[in-house]
Image (cartoon, rainbow over all chains, first blue to last red; front, side, top):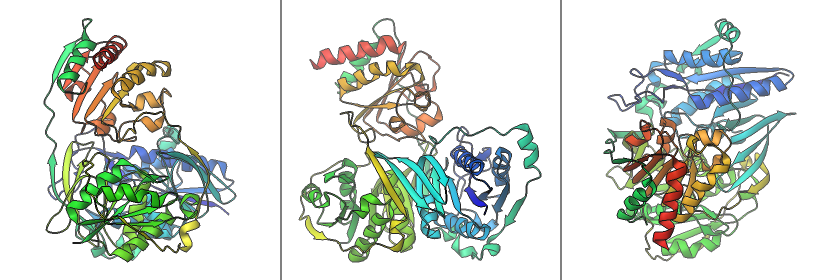
Length: 261
Length: 320
């Protein structure tokens, strides 16, 4: 039977742009170009590699986001994913991680899956907890933050490099996996891939398709509230000297004046 | 006073510094009740008591080490149900965040991750966070359920505050899902003898300009002269010059030391995200136009192979 892989991806404002908050303290998506979160490219890559290893596999990319989030799906499709699911609904604006994970879990169940693969974190919210929450919601093993991953005979195996130790993990499918930026460089879409992506199916779902009430999501349905967001004051530019043979000593003098030596 | 549940990060009974910082923050909100799990759990009690824990709940079982995350969630949930705390605080390690997030789903609570400060507020704890590569500071609170908040290292001082620290055994029954992900092997990271990157008061980092694994010795020598941790930029890590565990930046560690010294690092957004909340920033770079110089308190435009060894020698002789 075909191995069903669902990859969760996020459409985020470009991290190299001038990101800011909108008036309602949600992430401003209008003034900075959006794209597929860089860290999710690693998840797409590992999904494609696992699919290539399997006899028969299907890779579905899934996102929750506004109309423009289709761009992220198209990128993943052009890398080689087979089809896409886009959950889009005006009531989703301002949804926090609890609401997003609820929507994703329902969409994953509706799509059908053997393994869910996600990136280690988004580059905008950077929480890094969504995969663990998905595992909790779906009631399946969590095999997260992997630098190496493989699936064989219905078992997912991987290496998790933690602060104090490196661990080898194993779990039976179905499972939720997340991969780090150490898992292997993501491929670039080929011209052929980009052309093929235009013909691949993108299914659109809204909240009613997933039996989710508007009150469960959105800014009002969030379980957390942002009260204020302030731009961090620019650091006042310090002293810059050019080394003319004494640069190290001058720096030592500065460190001594600040009581670091 | 309300109880505040504090999840203890420890290695065989040795409490890691971020947990002691959490106790400082917990005391602002109520009375800290600590939860320590796994091998050596009971050995944490004396240190936790010195820093304000009125009670230390302990549980030890092979399950905590043999299976990933979920057994610890089960135990933290048992502690939550036993204590009915006003908030749950967890250190912002990768594992800590996952434990906190799963607990939050189970108890129907919102979660805030990576707080850098916590204050008591009229509507519950107010968390300060850094957003968008630390270019914004936000204040947030959990508006549903019991606040579950993870806090980054170096967010509060470690303060002695002697309390009873009464040890109580925590009864945990593991859920059906606890044994889903088996840890089949564990290789402890070799100790370098240097401070933990995220906990260090001083961090010395090297980047592309270091130009080779063999040259990281001069970065390490400078770090050792200051008793500092060693960091590396993504460029240096991707080139294979230094381990990923030492990477500072958006996809590595985020550090906030008293002093950050960047050598041969241009200061791309990816790197700035992980270090720009450092108190004092110093940089050495050949390129006078490098963006890192926009952040520094003191910068030297020059060849790091000249400047760094001279700096190390000068520090060593001054400390002599």
